[in-house]
Length: 383
Image (cartoon, rainbow, N blue to C red; front, side, top):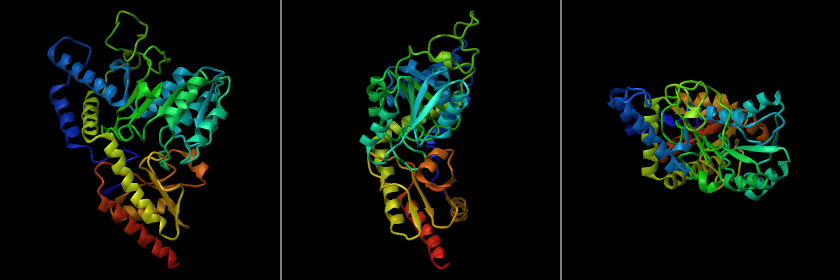
């Protein structure tokens, strides 16, 4: 199988990830932070090591700023629902995933409003100006994707963060498509809340996510309360992160796998990963742009304005049909709305064929996809 659905989840996982998760199940089976016996202490240390690695990789002030979550979606919900209050205003981009839009829609009933800022692909000045115009006196939070999960458009989140702070607002960045691919620093970039999917560009397993805080003193209302292994004499939830937001037993095998995945990213180098993956989608874009009946929705994907995600359609053929044809040829892509109807509405589509490579994608696999698309196009031309 040629796997090109890495925006959904990276596959395969590095060998070290699989090995370390198996080791965790064998040797780190105790509950971390709950007891003083040897295996519990070693498990706690392994979890802490992952916090340290995540803080270093993502530019957090310290390991206490790294909060484990079961997904990027959960991290986004924690920030959106934990920070906003009735009467607050939010600015989002017009390319957001439902992980952002659905929580905001749910909060509208409680008096939270939002405005969409229009993203201009390849024109960061216009994008920042659109966010500026959307800001208002009640704007308390900006939530935006670092890179579109459908069209690969990259947003200038550091510039948007600087704008937010001019208006005394905070910024929450959805880095589901960029963490592990595009270098970012929470501290240096002024990112107040960074939400990451562990199972995508960080090469960890499913069921892992991160919320990274720039200021651990900023308190969010909790989504869940319960046992944390700390301050057990009190019936009140702890005030300090990360324990405040980590009730219940952590996914230790997943966290150990995430630790190994981040090690793989660090060893390979994010800059290298980004440039190589961008080279793969740029090659495909150039091939597809020469084919009649193929619709592309953005300018050629160029660094630093895009991330390695590419969408296309074939004239008069539903994206799902193209996906099925490719699947029969052993090529895995994602078709449809990609849980991001706002992005499709912006580009005027009812669904697209999405291609997203990983560090393991070989150039010949992109060539095989291009050849298969050409064959499908040829059948359209004969009609």
